[in-house]
Length: 298
Image (tube, rainbow, N blue to C red):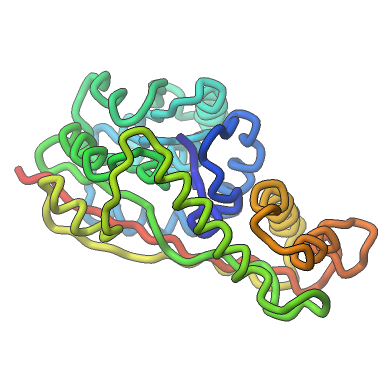
């Protein structure tokens, strides 16, 4: 499991190619994205902290390299945090990050496939977080029910799913056909649908996340969308992220775009071109992620 943007993306800015992804190979991009999006995640965690008070155990289901899991450790200094992921190499990076942040003594990892691996937790969770990991599972409703069963009475399940596609460039960039990113979004939606249809035990559900949480036996559903707004001129870090994201897009959805759009992407990714994403002054990052949460009855 890892972060993916249904903005792109764990988390998507890596495209909707969730079939045979080598998540460990994507670790640098996953980390760069999560670090860039940290202001958004911090606001989301602050929102959760208003109702989740002094949790004993926090579980990040589909933690990837652990950027958000470590933010949980920082936001809730009294909590033990367990990062759960199917990729051992990503969990190694999560452990190293927790150690660098001085949280290693209350940070654990659990390797295995969701949602079954959650049965190996020693204790029920007071807060279980799943950031763009549920949509990798064939039966999302069953996955949420399995997550709900691992909550302590009064515990909270929070899923980050949905939001809006990210934007990096103006609609008209001065070459190619205007609206490139909207067409990339459409191609990624198609890939995402094919990915979902091909998952083992795939079940089609209306993606009404509060309703899905209610059907999992939870109540007090609430949703909030959080904005990342990094306007032009982009910082070096934001620009590097945009280049990496568009590079990934070019690798993943090229065959779903027409020749003109592929040529436009190639020009955007050519560091020798002054109109590329490497150099142009109008590059920005604007994205919105939605968090849905609900509570297990006491």
